[in-house]
Image 1 (spheres, rainbow, N blue to C red):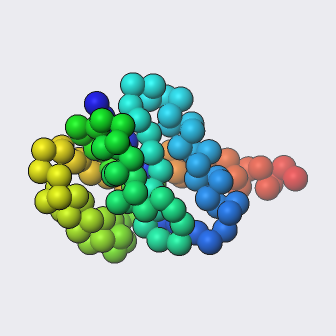
Image 2: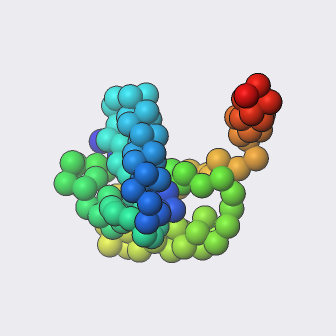
Length: 122
């Protein structure tokens, strides 16, 4: 069984956390065969270890960690790989994969363009 851990930065803002959880629900609707779990790097819960524990409780044998980050900053390049190395060490039978961040995807530019057009028409 596969679990997807969608990893956000985290915020002290309850509104920001709620919006992130909306994205989780949207992905969950698209991935009915997978457990889709949220996790945050800091400032909010659940943490990555919490999400891993939940995935294991659900019977996951494979984790796909999907960062909900735009670009490759320190969390993407250093912090998350270190966390995942620790998970692999603690759970040697668990397959752990790490997806790429969103990055310079043309769909991001399209969303930004839509936002500009919306302001132009106000």
